[in-house]
Length: 579
Image (cartoon, rainbow, N blue to C red):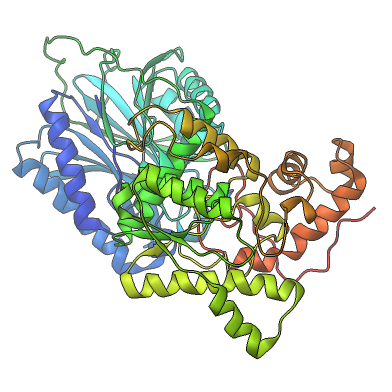
């Protein structure tokens, strides 16, 4: 089999069809008996409310039929190809569908049975559930197919696969990346294979789509749950592997309703593509991509998210404010790895409060990485505002940040760059950012990274030597060590330090993880060991900053709960965690 983990673009039906054709040709050249593509590969994923647009659904239906014909024209009509796309059911409701293409036609159609309504997805809003399990006979073996969430929920297609006696359960997946979730996925695949009583193959998407990053990592496991093959993560890849399946039992083509053991009825629909055995041929060496460390996978998600947000939205280059601090240093490095340093423009905007080492550290980073740079002092701009407004205190501090944001947006408008913001999750959580200042921009690479993880990733990237997957050749230490070692400061007033307003980040960040990601209330946070006074203070800060976060640009999701798709709280609310 050939599992093609590809990177489609939402809405680009023609481009995605060409992508499927290109990788199907590679599967055919490799001698595969079947080729499989991820969930919604033909439309891109997730399509969100595009699913509610009848014109888009109809275009998807036409595209999948045209793709079947194109495969046959290319001499691939004998290769069964499974692909995810958008369809509608008999009642005209949109469905998250899969199709088996064979012989120049759509041989089988079915729809996702279990719809996701947690985390980043809201599929009950857009889709109707399916009630069929397609089973295709290929080389004398029966292959059942399901879509993503069907694997994560008990019953449904998994139990129907066992009832059907299939030798393989093929899952078209579209599961986004989440830090630390890789082990849970592998455990799930093994458990479902044992429950279905057959081998299991899962082909996952790769690439960035707005806030989501899909990491690939497609896998094949045996009926006993043993890992047989695994693709690398964060890259497009064709995983070609052998799997020995039992001969299919005699069965007729057609549709047969079966109890799915979860209170629903799944109709098993059988078709035959080929009934004879596979030809004798040399075995394929199983590919087992090495697992990634947590730092490597998070960094891979950031690079993928930036690369695809920039590329899929048609930007040629990015611009960011480079302060000499750790956050902007990591954003610049991620951008250089994602796009190449020649497409990254750094703007140094010193004020009267900027330290000499901040400017020199920023210049050092530019030199190390080969970025474009310019210096735009903001002293005169600040003075012009002061002359008219006479601002003091926090208002004067925020003015500097807003002037810097205005400079970056002006350069974006003039030169066509995408502005990358540099705020991290810790700052966004407690409101330690300036609305329309350092929040001004189009994409926030660090939006879902706490400050402590910013340091961890910076040290990890500096420890890499030379180019590699998702990394550019930026030299042995692309981030000046002095940037990593210095005490963080916004430098908006004399001798300012982050600790003037916030607790140390190694104290703050664990508390934020518990409050934001685990949704612990005040008493539970205290019971978890956090200082009661700090708990109440941080809760007030986080709750009061919801309006700021709502206006922050998108950024790649890496945690179990990011600010945006995952965590949806009202701005106007009088609920307060209290004793």
